[in-house]
Amino acid sequence: MIKIKTALIGMLLFILVPPTQASEKGIITESGYSEVMLDLVNNMQNILFGIMIEDYGQVSNIAEDIAYHPGPELEKRIALLNKLKLEAMTFKLHEDRVRQNALKLMKAADKADRTGTLKQYANLARSCTECHITYREKVRSFIKK
Image (cartoon, rainbow, N blue to C red):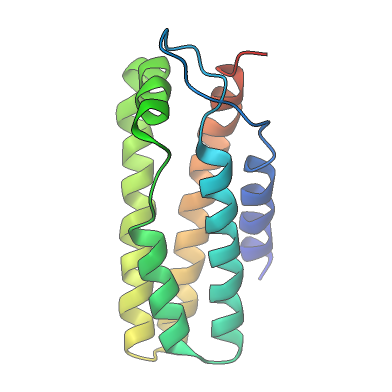
């Protein structure tokens, strides 16, 4: 439970990035990720509630939403990836790990496997937190003040 709380706190801290937007020159004044992260944090909370009340259908549906969540607008995403340069590849790997863990959670929930669902939820929360630890400050540093 402590790992889950730590993951949720990490996600909440990530969304506190000030609003920003991408410009034509590649200067980031809005990353576009704050709103996306807020939706994902809400989804993680709703999954946890679904697990607690053993509503595996809810857990599965929300896990699928996380796996296929929309990202920021293309212009903002490209501006961020350009700023990340060589790290863009590892950033995308983190996103892929989140997606894969969400799909594993969905499969465990589809089986109504309580132990497997809890394990996969913890894995999903860990992958989210690892991405935030690695990229939150970098994304913030690219934002033009």
